[in-house]
Image 1: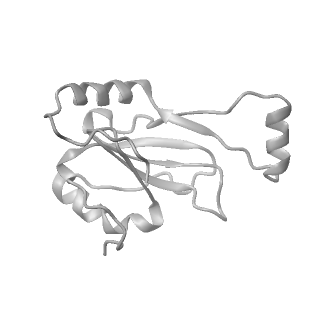
Image 2: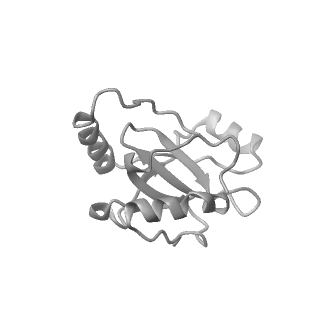
Image 3: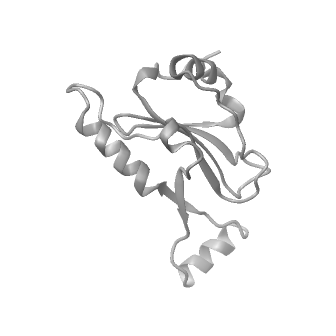
Length: 145
């Protein structure tokens, strides 16, 4: 069942589907499904609450979505769709610079560090190529929900 506040999605505009995990669990969500549209818009769902979109994605794209990273305790990612990038990393993970500010944040956050991430170079280039061939008038926003 789709939540009331969920925006309708044109599943045919899906460019990339992947899953990723962080080292933040087990007390907070640390496993996610990421859907990237041709426009670059990213839709992120905690894996526990992604059940309402998975059947539609599987039907429209003709794929089977299986989570394989849910038991990881470190930052990891993988591509599920498109088939040409299957099992490739979805994200490059990196940490900010060290120094006093980093140490202060580490203490303030009770020892939990935040790992930043960005789409891999190959996936970024793939999305850019899709945008070049994209029909005019399609949404080009890149908001993360």
